[in-house]
Amino acid sequence: MTRRILVRGGTVVTAADSAPADVLVVGEQVSAIAAPGAHEWAVDADRVLDATDRYVLPGGVDIHTHMELPVSGTVSSDDFETGSRAALIGGTTTIVDYAGQERGGSLREGVRRWHKRAEGRTCTDYGFHIMVTDVHDGTLEEMAALVAEGISSFKLFTAYPDTNYCDDAQILRAMQRAAALDATIMMHAENGIAIDVLRDQAIARGETEPIHHLTSRPPSLEAEAVHRVVALAEVAGCSLVIVHISSADAAWAAAEGRVRGLPVFAETCPQYLVLGIEDVPDGFEAAKFVCSPPLRWRRDGHQEALWEGVASGRVDVVATDHCPFTWQQKEAGRGDFRRIPNGLGVIEHRLDLVHQGVVDGRFSASRWVEACCTRPAKLAGLYPRKGSLAPGGDADIVIYDPGAQRRLSAASHHMRVDYSVFEGLAVTGAVETVLLRGQVVVDNGEHVGSPGDGHYLPRGPNALVASGVAAKPALGPAT
Ligand code: URP
Ligand code: ZN
Ligand code: ZN
Image (spheres, protein in one colour):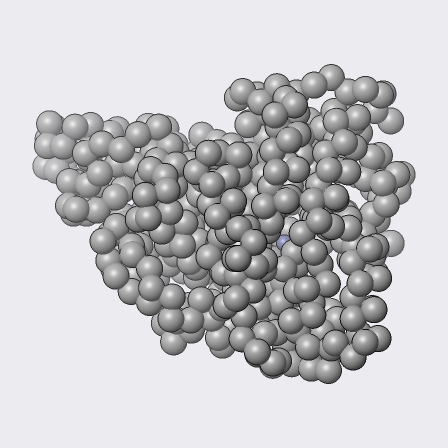
């Protein structure tokens, strides 16, 4: 018989509002939501979960992760099993990971490799974007087939000239193709050509410590790249997401495109909200904090601007860019910061860290849910199946204690990385119970599911384009 679970006595928080309500789950889906106690559901429930004094929210959707990503001669330390387990414990039930194209290789081959890594091992539901590092006629041809298979977004880079960079001609052609296919371009926007000049000049001056990674990637070169790719997307007529925005300058550049009515969307990450260069330790230990774009000075107002962007909705979503490396892996860059693998371990803490915006009175619990669950699901073409709590949607549910007090630490986290960039940080709030398609997979903070519980999710077009942000017509024909 189909299993019935009643989540009783909590405050249901959705992107629209917060209200006391009970949730009935039948099988894999939410069946009904009703005023507390105004029904007889408890009588024939197989299990009743008490959510008194707790929030009940849709499972988190993290649309920017990198499991087992090859970087700088090594591979990010969380695989699909360990990384998605940590995600689940942190209240994220869906991830969208970036499959990678090898330069000279096909997109299809990259996607095939990622399916092989994820299938049967992933604890959350999952989908893929693909990182396009080589735009040529063959790549453009392949994009249509991938969109038809549910890979509806493509990441391009104006950074990393040696490995991932595309020039403006390649970017424009890929954007035109995306526009024709109703697909979305995800953009890593930093001016990598100029940054590499600054980086190599720093090394030539003997500035080889990790802190010089952070200071050789200035905010103005992030904002310049955002301006440029917004202009290219306007010409192509495609929807564009600026991923991992780290600075006030870049956030404003993206917002400017939006103010002009373009389908330009902004993503930031918890690390840019809560960490500043002020928090980075002296010496080589700073390697733990090396990522791109880098952390920014708090004294220059970047964190405030990003929190403000999340509160106002100008920053649409918070994803993690989860890409951890162990201390031993980071050691590869001792004596030359250019060799430090870029990336941080964050996936477990996204809901908690963004919840601090609610605790601090910056925005409502609804906006928290919108930024971490609903808008990411819409942007990734997974809504309303994911990112909402509504009858007919997947029963991905988080029971959250908004008053729990704790400190983040590598000693208690579940990510496969032997330090935490958030070590000792006090947070208010904790995930207690998580359901994935109606199955309890986290119980009292412990993972009780299995690797392979997660299903692959084919994705549709970016639903935020249709839901209010006007797309301007393309200025030129798509090829
Ligand atoms: O430093 C970072 N962000 N590493 C992950 C790869 C990327 O650019 O998103
Ligand atoms: Zn990136
Ligand atoms: Zn990334």
